[in-house]
Length: 159
Image: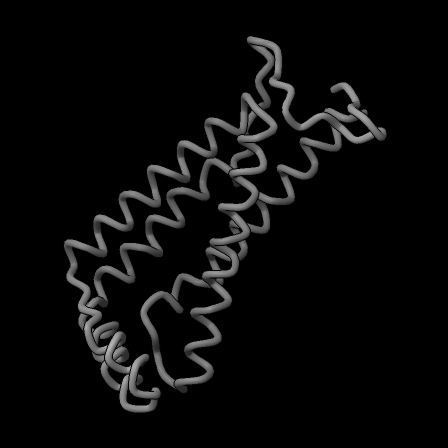
């Protein structure tokens, strides 16, 4: 990689054609693990709606009205799962060719890791099972492994 300006790596430079980074198995496995998590949430959609309605009673007026209008269906949750799976696969493949792709994949993995923390936090606050909490530890572990492999790959290329 070249340096630009004040000694920083130039993040806009593309890798030469044919120069691809091998994908770590944890990074390849990540989209499938995330898909399983999203499908768990889709399977429990009735519970999500019930939690939203119970939570609505404790919220101030304008926010309660907005939450009260939320209604999820298995079809909508399945569509969200499919869209997120497609994005994750696209970012994984893009990360092999471009530093921008690596950054996009890194942000996606960090977002998934944060999603796992929010599910665990919800379960603790509500003191009950919430959809997604069963697969949240697996998601966080997979995201951490994939992020670690991305970091190692970047360090190896900079040497």
